[in-house]
Every structure is written in structure tokens, then in C-alpha cells.
Image (cartoon, rainbow, N blue to C red):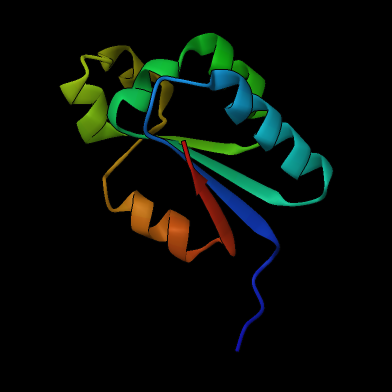
Length: 101
């Protein structure tokens, strides 16, 4: 059995508590964990340029393309961050811990 790198996936499905997302990503990375953040549902509204710039130093970031389309967040298309819904399966399956906001 292959041992996974210690990692944390953060699934952001709500536009509430952006400060928790930032703090958790930073703390996990500083503790040596690989961090991946995926924005989906109404959480795509937190995927602003300011939030993305902050997370860039701490985490690998993706945004659900279906949620971005549903939530009229089309500005993200040019950022190259959009991922299909199946990315969530890869995200959770590839991390040894995950949290949902």
C-alpha cells in the first residue's frame, strides 16, 4: 500500500467564513501539509482575485466549472482554475484528510 503525502483538501461550498479558509490553508501548509482548495456551489463567490492571490502561496486551487457557470462567475474562465465536477473525486481520494466549509 502506497503511503500518501500528508495532505489536506478544503472544499469550499459556502460563501461564509472566508477567513477560516485562509487561516486553515496557511496553517496546514506551515505544518508541512500539501493543501488543495476546491471552490464549488456558492463558494465560488469567494474565489475572488484577492482570495486566489492569498491562497496561491499556500495551496493548489481549483474552481468547479459547473458551479462557476451556475453562479455567473464566468470571470474565472481566464484564470485557468476551472475544473470539472469530477475533480472533487480526485481531490478527496488523493488527500488523507478533508474539510468542508
